[in-house]
Length: 215
Image 1 (cartoon, rainbow, N blue to C red):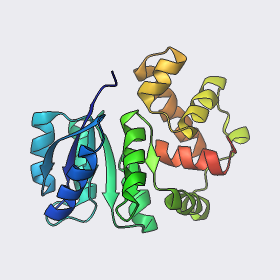
Image 2: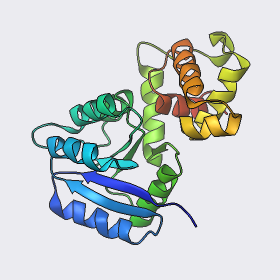
Image 3: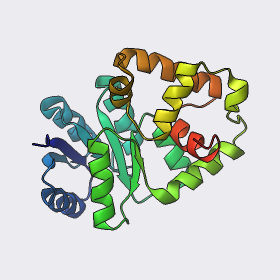
């Protein structure tokens, strides 16, 4: 029997929270165990319920999504947070991913597409709305600090192997399982390869690797 992934939604729009709850209720492997109307309320709920996944809005009154994300990652670094928002602004996407978001989805997607991305997230994959991958790749190319080419970055064989798996959307836990090494070891390799490639987040690395390194 497939295990159930628990979720919490943090969003200041009650109607949207209800829509998300209804959508998740259609999927047997996902279970909504709580919802919060603010970042502060969300932090308390996560500390109490310890969900597998958090769906987080970007633009909220009071503590915004980025600040909430940073606080969540400080308190529970292994908690997986997916931004679910209306903003497809390049700066918002890059800022969220660099603050540690494990995915970035847009609210205007078709419900079945949203569900499919959430299923992938439940399996430990990084998720980002399709039209945002090109935007993110463009942001990486046009920034003052360009990512280094893999051939010049001096990646070890293991780092290149892990980069390929990141490009496939695998989480640290899934990579550790696949390579039969500890999750801590994967984290160290990821930290080193990001530094060598002049990138700041694993989602950036995934998008860049697919678009530029042709993995």
